[in-house]
Amino acid sequence: MKKVVCFGEVLWDVLPEGKKPGGAPMNVAYHLNRLGIASYMVSRVGDDPLGEELTMFLKKMGLSTEYIQLDKDQKTSEVIATEGANHEMSYEIVQPVAWDFIRFDRQTANLVENADLMVFGSLAARSELSRATLYDLIAHAKLRLFDVNFRAPHYEQATIEYLLDKADIVKLNNHELRIIASWFGDEGGQEHEHVNRLQDKYKIGEIIVTKGGEGASYYTPMERYDFKAYPVIVKDTVGSGDSFLAAFVAQKLLGKSTEDILDYAAALGAYVTSQAGANPDYKSSDLVRFMWQKQLEQLKWQ
Image 1 (cartoon, rainbow, N blue to C red):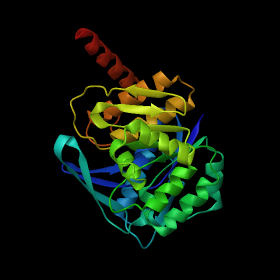
Image 2: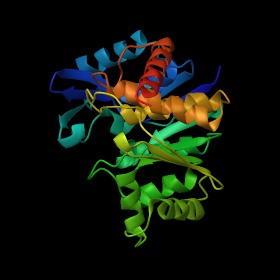
Image 3: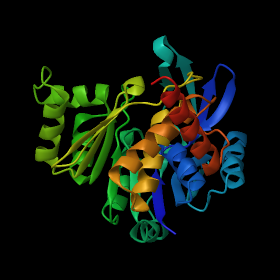
Image 4: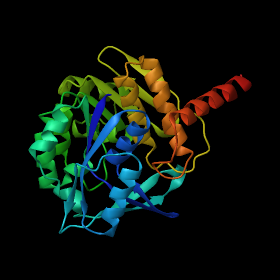
């Protein structure tokens, strides 16, 4: 079985309808597990009721908690999520919390060395200790996927550039791409020009640019693929990009064609958008049924 390590934040998303487990790396791990990939979460929670409840959720969902560290001093993270225009979510992220203090150890390094891929974001790199741990673990990874996650003011240009330089695959949204382009005085360029600059500067093999309801684009050094989002009635957008990324990783590790990888990723992202929260309960068969339904709807209107 293919193995993926996800490094970073685990937390509670506090939504208008109540709290739900979240954090981009944890969402990716959850969906990878649902898609038949052995996924391991490296993070840290507080020694408190919220931390206990979060680890119980992970166990219930079939995820290992062996690499979830326990912090006696810092509390488990909660993030206040608010829905704005066009169903876009904004987040109030408290600092410091337990995942700001993830520590390096040899056992976790061995886990990363034996995994097929390591997924990491930028949010957990906001603190000195977790950032140092991330940098150490990246050195042990066979394949590195950087999921850019700009949550102002919780990122610094130097950190982002370091992680871009270490990444084999990068996923970011069009807003994040424009921010990075502005660092190089490239605000007025086209998307493909921004991407080409990143590919050339950091020698990144694959870049995914997500665009919400407009779909996404996938770039390699030689090719570009554009694909549309599946039309759905949006429940909320929490975790839609994370589910997209998990499906992309799962299909890629299973050796599927580029077209199949992107179609499957778009389908899962849309399915999650049509559900409440980042981690709805589903099976692979539910996703296949969803894809068939959408394809039939498309044929109906042709």
